[in-house]
Image (tube, rainbow, N blue to C red; front, side, top):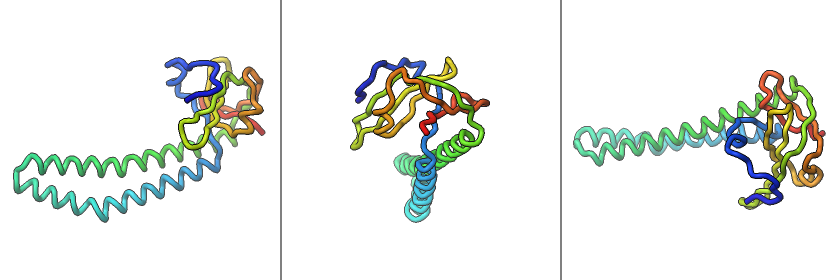
Length: 175
């Protein structure tokens, strides 16, 4: 649910691939959390599922039953999901960390402007978003705090930090 929205995003705007980098504390929490979920998933696989899969494979080979092979396939898909999803979260967290570090060290400053702002009330807590444009062709959405959301106005000029070699990676410089 969007409130305070002044513009509906087109399909092209939504899938352009621009990246607003979040706060470094949140990135570290994401890395630690995804690493812990990966460890937990691997423990579940080893302790609970792996011996079960071996028994299912043994039973499916000797019984020649299609239902046995379907159970083997279902367990293998579950194993794949339990490893692939935490690995994907961990990789994304590491990419966010690298982008944040690069913006801090190598970021170029430019002027931009606030295009839109809205509040997402679909969860238990409201999430505040602003959409900004910079360098004439780039437009990105970023989560901000409630106080920042209230201070920023549509068409307000802001400073944007971006990577010169990857200008689609940016964040508002609100300091």
